[in-house]
Amino acid sequence: MHEYSIIQALLDQCENIAQQNDATKVEKIQIKIGVMSGVEPHLLSVSFDTFKEDTLCCDAVLEIIHQPLVVECQECKHIETLTEVKYKCSNCDSSNIKVIDGEDMYLMKLEMS
Image (cartoon, rainbow, N blue to C red):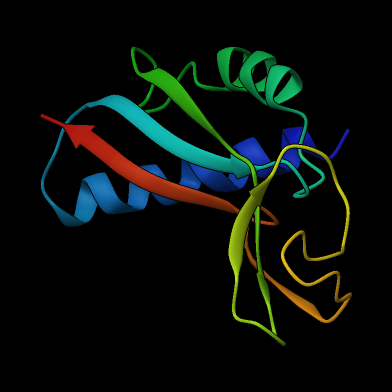
């Protein structure tokens, strides 16, 4: 499961940010996970609870925002949020689309004290 290595990298990043800001504790971590990121949110949450002990994030809450796939048609410039994975514009039927959001995982917010 690559979720373990993702959580370890996230915890390292959060600890580095906390130390740079003279914080002694991370209270909340908010991340955004795209549906096409290849990351399983439930496994990520379980991994977080397992590995956060003995870090500045030991009492932190992990908030996960699920990001649907957002695409832009390169022909008609129509932007839409997809409810199912299909790479075709619903406006002009073109398959020349660009993914705008929903393929990545981002650290969105960090609450520290």
